[in-house]
Image 1 (cartoon, rainbow, N blue to C red):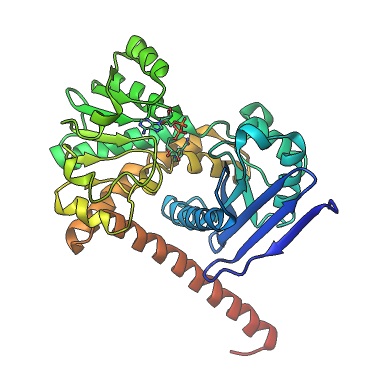
Image 2: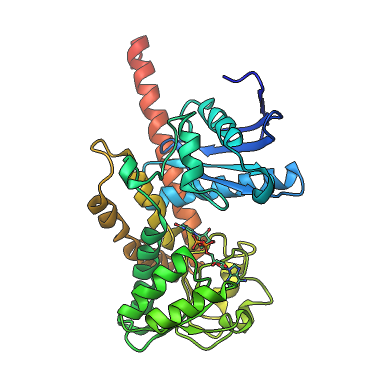
Length: 370
Ligand code: NAD
């Protein structure tokens, strides 16, 4: 390992391991959080962000890595939850040396954490990281990876929207339904295409107006202002841009019976799940409906390697998972977001219990105890 990479443990209650990696020779200041590996190695993307302080970065990486444990648990990927953040402005600090140092940092965890693409990191960045560690996923298909996860996330969200239509209107048909998409980036634009093909009328808002114009030309998407997209009357509001947009001020302004989109951490606080339910808005818990990408990546770990057919079969289970959560939510009078959290917690706790029992069994055999 490089002599210039300094790794420090940050003891954080409730997390298996949180470590800081600093390499002043290239400006690396990163944190890896391994939340839970009960279900498998902790997989989660590597985010680069100009955090104002290390505390801010720590808060984010903790929140995100815990979210990955929940997402993988419900999606049954056989993986645990982790995340990594690099502190810095992507326009200023990106360099080959930086990513090589990050690769050495990931490698130092011996496979407990597996990295992937996230905000401000690309497949090209991961290719550099791979030179320093094998614990990288989401590489190009031509390199044996599962490729860009976004199209698979979009498939899952599309199927999830159909399940929400079925639940709300008694038919999963998109024909004649209006869908407002906030953010027509990698996932949002792929989703828009699928919805239009299925007969929906799609409205879209994005800071990138060029992309909107292109989608207007290509598929007849109706460009809408950033202000109107969240309050317009529609059958489905599909947030595919930012998190934390559902809160006390925004929820009363929604004019839709369904919120179902790709963006992570949509609820500003967990209690906002109840605020939505109290207004009769059906919510598709974010980490359940947007699991298509992680499901696709997880298929890289199959003994025979990546196989798209296996991935699509697993993604097709998303509507069923959502319908089960909405059923629990109705029966137990809890918001779907709480139903999802409880399910994830139970899956991890059961697996932890089973592991404990198995290890006690092994110890018992070793000591001859009965
Ligand atoms: P992206 O960066 O390609 O697209 C996001 C788009 O949102 C951009 O075009 C951006 O201009 C736009 N945007 C930003 N602020 C906006 C605003 N206020 N109003 C309207 N548009 C705005 O990202 P993506 O990969 O498409 O992911 C979208 C969301 O889904 C993110 O929250 C991401 O974390 C989440 N997600 C993505 C994946 C995946 O596979 N890519 C998987 C799970 C979750």
